[in-house]
Image (cartoon, rainbow, N blue to C red; front, side, top):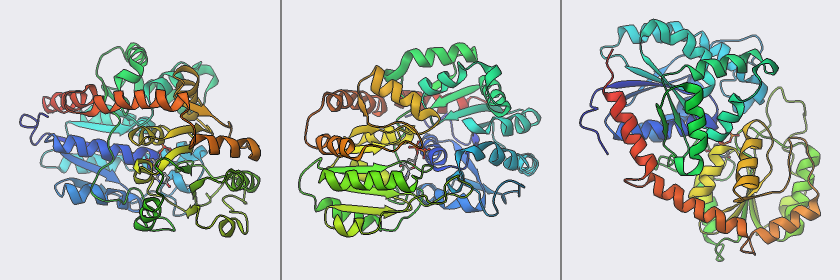
Length: 432
Ligand code: UDP
């Protein structure tokens, strides 16, 4: 790990306000901080709590906290995509763009201003407005993988929204790009992205390890972390628990909830089911309703966590054997760092690309359902859940081989470890 040459070179991190984006960006911040870079993170007040674990480890990291600008179509008080549906991405970025002037002012009055800004991949129009006047290097952080990004980039740009078109063009023109992925998984896709960008400044640094400072990672739910872990500790058989969770954005409607509850009940498996709080502005007002009596009927063999689960910790627990997931990229990587069999129910955006890659091309996960509004057949799903913790499916064996490659990539001397060193070194040679 190189840190001597990079001392005091400053970079600013600009996340997109959604858990699947902020959390890995903070993990990257941690990695660059331990490599000696001076870091500042921009957030709005309601997202400041995400920083607690990082700031407890690195008190020297600066924060730039600015009030969230109001926007006519964003419900009052919303500062995070988690509280609304994915359709709100353009509005959130548009609202945040109003903060470019105060950020410019902060930059111009800073005693050692950043030489580079790392923007989340969704913040391209923000970058477009901010960067030219500052003369810094623009680096994109991509929490999805190279396969998904290059699939988006290969779309016919005449058939996509203006927001997505501008996003693609802007990101392709950036000075550098960092993936939370590893080259051994998808080297051809990395090359493909380089062709689009017309340069080689692409770093695969994943899977970024979750910051270890505390179990708190993105929030708290209805059951305290210690209780969840105690419950898992009490499950004596390794890999006997199914974890069910669809990330930070997805809520199920009443009929989907009933079908999933029925499947869990029929399967007889031990499980943890995370039920995300309902969102504002969604098309269903009957989201996230756990069927009456379900929790009593499964008492002792299942936990229902409302709101937020300590997912990364759950997936690493020896008792957890499989994971019914939307296949969001962060969740895939956390599954890889654990040792779970992935049962895929892709719902939206990159989940479909991830499913094609992991299920159809690599054979490391099992497709069980598909689509945001699909209602699974509870009998079939129950059977899959049961088998997922009882049988050594070939997909699990292949997933474990991929896991080995991922762990090799992040250990000292591995490709992702070296890429982090290289990223810190290259940034440390920049000057304004
Ligand atoms: N997450 C969590 N607890 C929850 C739901 C999500 O810790 O109850 C975390 C999860 O561990 C992952 C991130 O939120 O780090 C979700 O990212 P992902 O890319 O999987 O999906 P998204 O939420 O962006 O669809």
